[in-house]
Length: 447
Image 1 (spheres, rainbow, N blue to C red):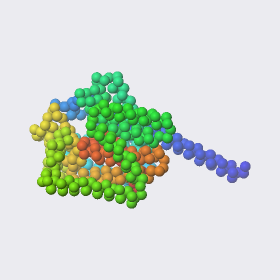
Image 2 (cartoon, rainbow, N blue to C red):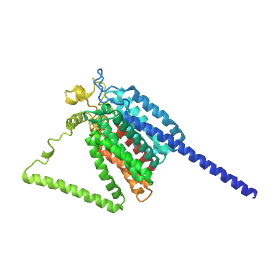
Image 3 (cartoon, one colour):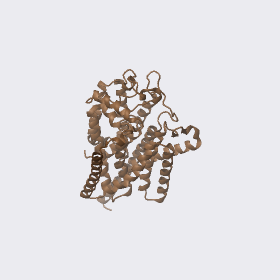
Image 4 (tube, rainbow, N blue to C red):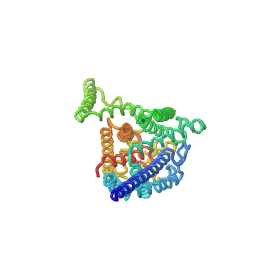
């Protein structure tokens, strides 16, 4: 072999060794990011007080007792994710550009803390939410692949299903409440939300598997999650799961069509809905009936009274709001709900949200904050649907991850009308949506 040939062979070996080291390093970073994601999922779903099935009200404040563990856990998770930001530091400038609309929204949230009803609480909650965002960015850039993110989320959900099943079997008396199964969680509705998430994540992951062993395992986890969901007796979560199961194939089939066909189908559906509304109004006009009469007695489990109260408070300060996170669970001397004799302000009917995330955003961050949050959410919904369109007909695992990214924001959009999750601290769906939104920005948006 000539000198030039030996030099070329030596250079080739060096290149192969470098690529091998880079691949090993990438896998280690992704493994670390996946572990952080699993730990974050476990915490937001279980919380700092396992098996505490009743709200503990602080007698000094009239609100829920603040857990000192919460901030320590989030700071600990941030500490675990900090190395990910360092090792992926080259990707951060482009990531910050992609997240610019979200960062501007956080800037407005920070501004609202200056005139908040309780500035200390508002600032503290915003800082913790910013820490949450940093962790989500670290996890997204650390994993670097939506399929890895899907696997990490499915793993975390499988662990939760296992914990709740064992809790139900080993300690049925502690796990069951008069309203339904709560297991290790704080409330039966919390278990319902967790199993809704687990059923969707593990179900889409099971569908994306190519080997029969993987399919059997993950479908088994999905079935167990559905059993826990039914046992929780959470009607909202059960209804949402049925809606997801019906809507997901329709969404995938719709996104697989050509653009003109897709727009035509959407236009036909909109025309059918408009025709039904027009027909109902015409019928009421002919017979002299009130078109709102069928809905007159509906209170959505007394939510309408809370909505009316929050709306009245929003009207008092519609542009700037009352401050990020500064409306519920704040200083009782200034908390609006505690200044009334409404049923939801009483200790035996503790309420710490409007049960409508959009109303909560409006009353705390004003029209500017609500508009910005809607723009960001629509951006994520559109980006997720485009990812489904691009993945149709390709790799099954890639399509499974795209379905998670594309359908979950739509589900949260609907869920947020009945519960406060979007930009709500320690919310299960809100935290997962933030993570998936960051991943959608990383995948879809060009810096």
